[in-house]
Image 1 (tube, one colour):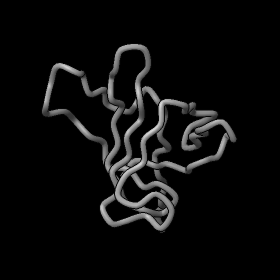
Image 2 (image 1 turned 90 degrees about the vertical axis):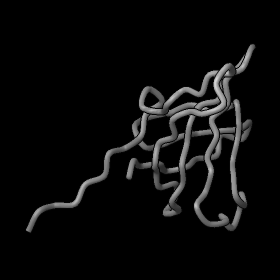
Image 3 (image 1 turned 180 degrees about the vertical axis):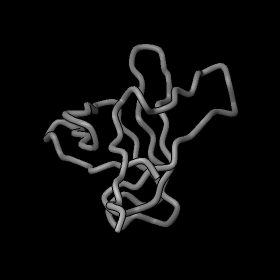
Length: 91
């Protein structure tokens, strides 16, 4: 039986949404078991990661955005001042 694997997300894989374009690419992901789209919104001074959930997330609702994020290792994004974590895989 084939082993099912997921591709773990890194920052380099996330599409960049330029400020000068209204339409941009989004990446299909699973965030802590919840389907979503994500991209990095390019802004002057600092960029933000944007996660748009298909169905409302119990903690973050329809979307999550922060400019305080890092990928510690593939599939693990830490964010915020308290260094909370999300597990993110590509669909």
